[in-house]
Amino acid sequence: MNRVAFFVWIKDDTPPHFIHVEVLPMRKADKLTIDQAELVHEWMTVLPTTLQPTDQARVWADEADPQALRVHIMAAGHTGYTIDFKVTYVDSREVKVELTDVQKGTQHIEETSDLMQNLVEDYIRHIHECAQALQKVTHA
Image 1: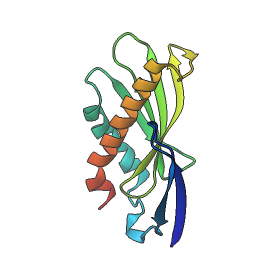
Image 2 (image 1 turned 90 degrees about the vertical axis):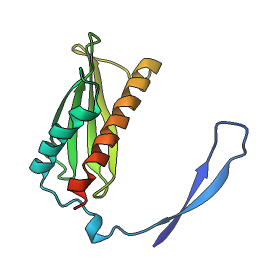
Image 3 (image 1 turned 30 degrees about the horizontal axis):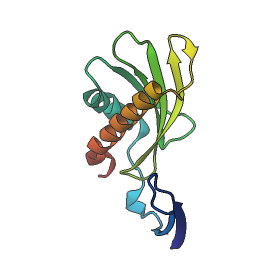
């Protein structure tokens, strides 16, 4: 068991402070045991139910990482935005979501604008909702 200290800075006038967290070893039962192809199928079924009805998504296996999936979301409407994520299972319940690409049409764009930040955060929330809905499959 390890102890880790984090320095926390709160955005208001509260002074910064340290918090201590215990890092526990992952139990064997917490590891993802579902077949990656089955996991992709489950994500393809559930992810659209967490998105807006006019959004579209593709999900496929990350060939380099058996604990990860790739998610490609085509934003609703005529925006032409597509957003790519890598979704890695940290354990059988929790996912880490990484933004890998943002495009408008065929052009790669910066994700630093407020509009893009809000859109990306919204899709990350939907991805976490999907992972939570799939816990009955991933945490069996």
